[in-house]
Each structure stands twice: as structure tokens, then as C-alpha cells.
Amino acid sequence: MEEGTHKIKHLDIEEREEFFVDIARALEHTSRNAFIEGHRHFAAMSKSMAEAIRINADELARDELTNAERVLQQATAMIAQFKAVHPYPLVSMAIH
Image (cartoon, rainbow, N blue to C red; front, top):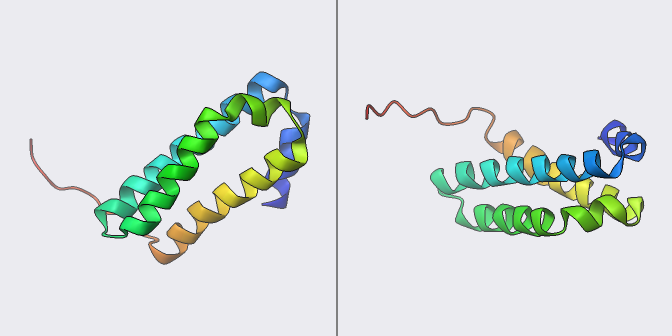
């Protein structure tokens, strides 16, 4: 993950903002999967973090990079933690 945090230093502000929005989307996806699998507390934490990142994406992209890197590390740690416990996502076989 160290590699990912050093890459945001080389991005311009718009690219950093898009990057944080993508991280928020990944957290929302993780939140949905956690909710489906019955981990409501983890789902709520992931959803809250995703909303906070999405709302503050422009500030994270423009302000101090050390804070942005810290947020990035926390978000990726949440995603990695869920993937470590649930390496195989549920696949819906429902026919609509």
C-alpha cells in the first residue's frame, strides 16, 4: 500500500479528486457486500467512511497530502480487511 500512497503525490488535483471518488465507490461496494453477508456494523462503518470521503474529496485532493494519504491508507485497510475475511464474493443466481 505504500506504493499507492506515493502515487497520489504525482497526480494533479482533478486526478486526485477522481481517485478519492473511486475509493469511495469501492468502499460502498464493500459496504453492500458486508450488509448482504450479515455484517451490519462493518457495512455501516464502510458506508460512513465512503460518504465522508465522497463529501470531502475536493478538500482531500487540494489540502495537505499527508492527511489525504492517511485517509487513503484507512480506506484501503477497510477494504483489505473485508477481502481477507471474505475472499470469495457472493454471486447472485437470481433470475429476473
